[in-house]
Image 1 (cartoon, rainbow, N blue to C red):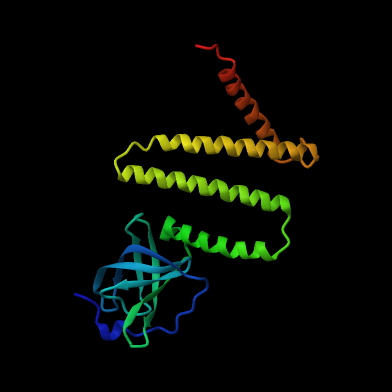
Image 2: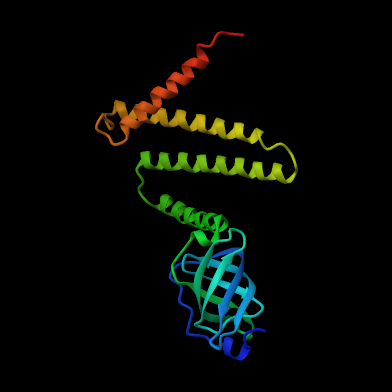
Length: 230
């Protein structure tokens, strides 16, 4: 049994977005109860998502205004949503159902959405960097952070591809270790510069934890370099 089309196509009003949506496909299961007590379960795909809602494509759909439970089939995470509006093309064909999450939630849509959103934000930030006055130190830190993320993302992609191809993915771990060493070396030089410029002192928050970590790291590294040759 499915919801009646005549009632389910009624829109509860125009669709109002509070933030940009991003094109990410997320497979869902939608569970809802109609006013007459009939219970329904439908497969759906979210094709445009943000923290506040999404556009769903599904064969049968609830009456507008009804609340439904959405289940992300990739993560098994659940959330509650309200059927907000039917989106139609100029021809009148239904393009999808706009839903509003009762509690805004970016994590519900998974990592693909997070990556898509971050990519768009980075492009916007790039335009701001080109046109604005940026502190050179802040810009350098930003470039280092982006470079670190880029190399880590490449290593993760290599890991996944080797798994799919049934190749040994463990060698990718050495790439991540090399990247951590490179990053730690860069940060150490930066901290040395801060110490010389007296931007860091024994009163700086977290400096004591850093000191203890460096002592332990120095101890372990000394064991390697002082080990007798074999």
